[in-house]
Image 1 (cartoon, rainbow, N blue to C red):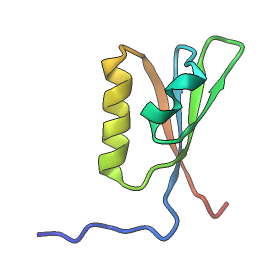
Image 2: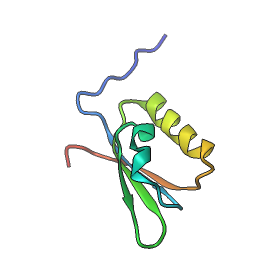
Image 3: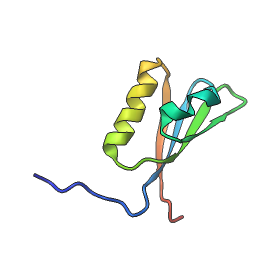
Image 4: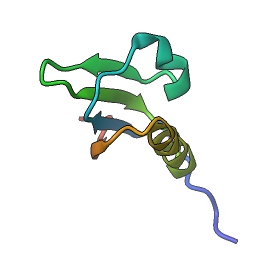
Length: 78
């Protein structure tokens, strides 16, 4: 059995999709911020504690039939 990697500071992710999201759905996206862009895309931005949480978030996007453009992991330390 492998040990689960625990982060002191959870990694930050930027997830881009091809459709705007309403701010009322923030609870569904684990407190990530939603930025709707002028080109019709949206960016979800925020910490994701582990790979399981990331896969859960991506599954929710799929359940709403949203097209994923990119997933980018950002170093929270800069």
